Amino acid sequence: MKDTAVPVPASDRTRVRRIAENARYDAATLHAIVDDAYLCHIAFSDDHGAHCIPTACWRSGGHLYIHGSNGSRLLKQLLRQTCCVTISHLDGLVLARSAFNHSMNYRSAMVYGRFEVVEEDAGKHAALEALMEKLAPGRQAEIRPGNDKEYAATTVLRISLAEAACKVRAGGPNDDAEDLAWPVWAGVLPFTRARVAPVADPACAVAAPAYVRNWQDQAQALAPIY
Amino acid sequence: MKDTAVPVPASDRTRVRRIAENARYDAATLHAIVDDAYLCHIAFSDDHGAHCIPTACWRSGGHLYIHGSNGSRLLKQLLRQTCCVTISHLDGLVLARSAFNHSMNYRSAMVYGRFEVVEEDAGKHAALEALMEKLAPGRQAEIRPGNDKEYAATTVLRISLAEAACKVRAGGPNDDAEDLAWPVWAGVLPFTRARVAPVADPACAVAAPAYVRNWQDQAQALAPIY
Image (cartoon, rainbow over all chains, first blue to last red; front, side, top):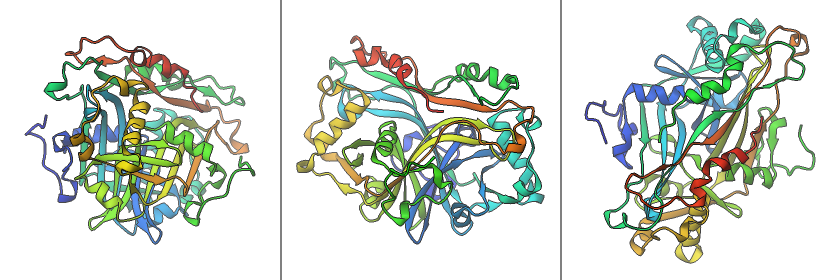
């Protein structure tokens, strides 16, 4: 159901047309979808046509961040054009009584805009440390930190989350009334991203820190959305 | 390591440049990545720029299939241009001794080409039944099948998998030799897509079939790649 308190789309480009009742335009939904992702997909074009590239992402405030090698064709192209960044989480298969009403539960976000370079004086170091904090909280203080050469070889880009739209489907099947008596099981087969037992590097003799020891427990704390 | 027996890229567009040793061009890898996906991301362009749209996908033979409403702007645009279809699976976080060598384990596939309509006489019904078979094997025989109106309202498109490239990263961290003695845990924190307990529609009194009862057991049979 659409909450009338939810903000309106930021632009015509982000107004959801297809199954518009699943649209969400509020920052809380957007941030939650981005924060639950380690990867985004970025659409852009060059002389060879459209490309869809997956890359690691993280959020800090009102921006989504990516990084890569200075030589990356992706990063160079993204500074030249507006693009679309999409994140999707699959939460379940929705099994209806009729073939036609089968669906999936998902949370997706689409962001439009242009990436900008995050220079040293604009928080490049802090941005990369925020990525590490997302991957493994507290680990930045334990690792061999980046040196000047490594920082210089890395480009960090960010894109504003201001022009974005989310779509969320949750809940059970929406069958036609005349199909409700059809003698078939109906419901949701949910998915979640689970955490499997950590695998230590064979050359590593250092005891696992808490974020490694508790890796699988954290998974259990994630409530599936269905 | 790159296997020299692996096929070469189908086109210059699918030749992987960045971390080329992770490239795979063989059909077995491509099919496995597609078959493990329920969603793909499609990049295309229109007057508003590039778009990246997530949608359900499945494979039959050498094609990737999608479907949607006849009115879908996505489907209409895809018939007018070449596009890029990308599938990505995140398999784990790779924690190295140095910040710079942190990475992720993943399996991704990028497909280039143009979608074509799958008409009735070209197997539209069979294609939609293949989707159902992927979602829940055997369920097609139990549900209220599609009627003429529903089939007529649905467009099925397919794209050849001939022009595609995969990238796969697996295994532990690749640290610089001089970092190996750094006193920090190193290894992989793996992810898998897990199956959570099925949720029956409250209005459903029909007993769960085997593919619902065994939903979570199937998850455990999936070996994580790390």
